[in-house]
Structure formats: structure tokens, C-alpha cells
Image 1 (tube, rainbow, N blue to C red):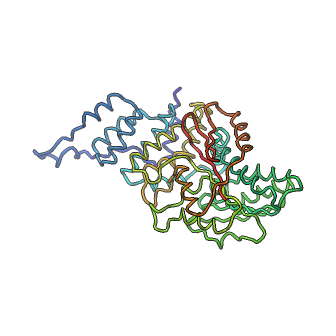
Image 2 (image 1 turned 90 degrees about the vertical axis):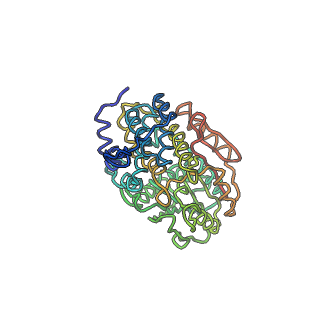
Image 3 (image 1 turned 45 degrees about the vertical axis):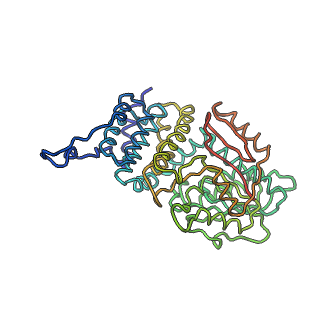
Length: 427
């Protein structure tokens, strides 16, 4: 079912920083010089012509990415002209995803990916509106709930005999993960433990909370008080690259928990910086002697993959995400457009359009995370069967196309045949 033209106009206005798709070639770009008798007409390859004639959207997106990688501006522009007629933020999942991936390709050619990423991050709707987009994604798809439940299960198991708990959450966001844990600790036999949370988050993420980290602390403190759980909150508005042990205020006698929920992939590694903050942070955490460390990450390989392979990986990964959203929200639902635009498009553009330090969305597969944790001195802490059954009960509320896979003490949440989120724990 077609979406109204207002939807697309509205998106273009809101994504003004995503530049209208301008022709890449100027009027005199067809030859070596205007009016020259030696001008050479660029030729489109037979393969490119066949792809255009077949009008297979996925093939054309990949072919366009290859032409961009080859710096073939003539072919790129022809593909983009065709793609503009085929993609739509109001269409089928592939058409909607294609609209954002096309923007990423245009931004890559114009070297504007970083400014677009920052614009989408900072020039958001007012905080209550954005909060509703994020909350809507949280409710209609189980990806975040899966991550939070699996991590909390490992934490509860490791903390079952502790009386003083200190949780360091390296991306606290809105603090939603800790609501169910506080409620569970409140009913623990023998009474709840003393609980302290250090919430770390990038300072520019304040828009996602409707304010600074104090908003999260106040919300969780009210909940803990209502549940009878002794509670303290410490907010750290600091980038993980700048964080050091001295910021964390570790206290003797506390059982330490470290939570990495969809955060570590933002840390630059050895392919970006000689400082390798990704591994540095893991070594620092190991030196804190935590009782348990939880990891939740997107199961995708976009960190060091060459551009075209990275583009294909992003296409396949986010197509599964868009398909899962499509099941939950009708295509004429404008809130669906907002969810995809504000919660997903920014990351897609960054993966496609940016390189070096400007590319901050750098996902790795769980096997690579295993090697990093092992090198830092960690050992696996298998997730219990109780966590598995809890998540199976959660998934009963969602589409039957979601699947839960267990392997080597880790859990994967997938859509159909594609694993999308991985969860594990370490000691």
C-alpha cells in the first residue's frame, strides 16, 4: 500500500542534511572538453546495462556500490538515477532500506557522510518525540529486550550471594535495562542487596533521554525506592575513549559488574588507531577484577571488511531488521517511518559513507569478540538455561519468524535465518 506523498516530503525535510540527490556529473562531464573534437563518450558496460534492464533492486544497489568503489562516476550516476525511481521510505522493506543505502552512497561520493551522521544525531525532533521513537522500536521488536534480559540473567546468577553490588554500564542510554533487575533484586530471599550503578554515556546522547544523565538516575532512584532496594547512581558523561579507572570510583567490598550493551562496536580498534581503545577498555575492565562482564552486540561484520563486502553485509543485516519492523507496523503508519529514520538510518549512512575515525559503527561477529575477550584475560561465563527459557517466553509475544539459538554458552536472537544480536558473559 502506497504511503502519502506528505510522508516522503516530510522525510526529505527532516533529512535535509541528507542532501537532495543531485546529479554527480556536471553538464560538460561527457567528454574531455566542451566542443572538443576528441571528446570521448563514456560507455556503460554490458553487465551494467543488463542489471538496469532487469530492475532487481538488490542487484542494482550492490552494482552501484561497486561502481562507487571503483570511482566510476558515470556508471554510478546512471545506477543512482534508476535507483531513485525504485526506492521509497514508504514502500516494501527493501525499498525503504534502499532509500537510506542510496543516500549513503551519494554521501560517500560527496564525502559528506560524517556531517550527515552528526546532523542526524543532533538535529533530532524534540526529546519527547524522539523518546517515543526509541520506545516504539523497543516495544515492537524484541532485540533490546533480548539483550537486556540475557545480560540481567547472567548478572543475577553471578550476584546471587552478594550484599553490595556495583554495576558499571558503559552505555546507560535511558536505563531501561535495570528496571527488571531492580525489581528482581527486591524479591531476593534474605532481602535486596545494596545497589550502585555508574552510568556511562557519550555527552551528546542527552537528547535521547530528554536531558542529562541525572534524568536516568532520578528515574531509577524512584523505582528502587518504591521496591525497597538501597540504591545510588553515579552518572559519567564521557566517551569510552576518554574513560580511565579513576573515573569509576571503585569501592572495596563491592561485587563489580560491567555491562557492555551494544556499545563496544563504537570503540575504535587497531584498524583505526594505534591506541586501540576497544582492546584497551577490555584490559582496563579486566584489571578491575569484575565478578561478571556482559556483552550484547549486533551480529554483523562491518569493522574491517572491504567497502563492497561491508555494503552487502549491511544490506542483508538491515533488510532483516526492516522486515521485522514491517510485520509489526503497517506501511502507511508514519511512526514506522520515524522509527526507521531516527533509530536506524543514521547508522546505515555511517557504515556506508564514512571511513577512518569518522566511521564509528564498526560491528564485529561474536567469534571476533571472543578472541578479544580471551586476549584481555577473560574466561566464558555460560548463560543459564533459565535465561534461555525466559527469552523463549518473551518471544511468544512476537512474530514466529524470530528465533533463539544457543551455542557455546551464548545466545543469538535472529530473524528467520539471520542472526542479528548476540549475548554472552565473561569472568
